[in-house]
Image (cartoon, rainbow, N blue to C red; front, side, top):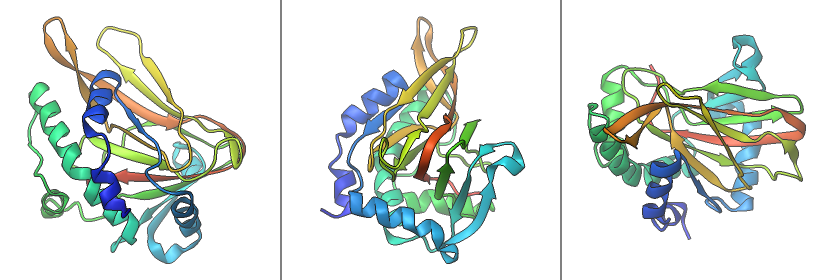
Length: 235
């Protein structure tokens, strides 16, 4: 089954329920092992990328990542376009609950046109590479005025075989409460969908916003590659 059809066939009501309830949704088997190996291998092809970031130089952690250049490789463009429409429906519901503007168009190309009109021209899908001892500090992927409030990460490596440690971690900070952490048990080809920076939570007086952060714990051995799918472009 083609990647776009696979995404359309996902259990989107369950994904939305998990995001509402827990702030993340785990989706196994989005990419095949062969697709994962090919994408991880792309890290060694600099012609595919617009920039490389060594995290330690910027205080982001340890490890590195590369942002893809336009035109995006076919599978990544297909994944970005296929995931966006159902997530835009959820994003609009979340923004209405949080009393935020704007609303998001149903097609990703129209949202990207909005980004580009505001000077956000640089693509943001990326490949991350970790070695033993590497980690990613908690952060939020904000790149300009226009931000799509959900993003995805797909694990390309095999936990327990290619590497040990390196768990994907989410944190949630509620007003006047201690922070909550969530560790997401990804497998190769599995995807986690999560908020970029905040989400609504139902309280006794209606919905309120909670701030979210995400990162990766220390890799204890081996190497780990991850595909990051961010739907807004960067200024």
